[in-house]
Amino acid sequence: MKRVTGIGGIFFKAKDAPALQAWYKRHLGIDVQPWGGAAFDWTDADGKPTGGTTAWSIGSQEGDQFAPSQASFMVNYRVEDLYALVAALKAEGCNVFDKIDDSEYGKFAWVIDPEGNKVELWQPAEG
Image (cartoon, rainbow, N blue to C red; front, side, top):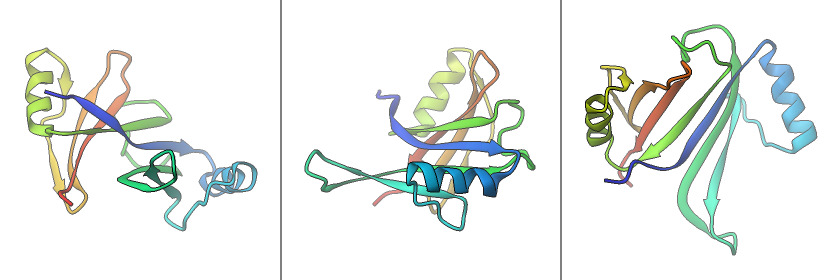
């Protein structure tokens, strides 16, 4: 079974999200959208789309999206078979959340790494 197949997203907390978003837009040229982030479409060496996207966003420190982690970031990893991976991680003794979300964007699950960082696992929706 393949486990992680790529990075689906990187999410940051910020003390002043609008100011940090503006810094990334101005100095690094990231096309920050009104929702607070950008979507980077995957391309091949010739610049042709290959069917994947990596989300990047900066949000407020408010809320519990990263809880129980105290980290200021969370990485979302793409996986092929979320249910199989969650079962394997549980069998290996990992700290896996019981909840699995199924949405229009795909299936999501979470695990806490040994350093206490919350890791998001994502199986993209079909198509």
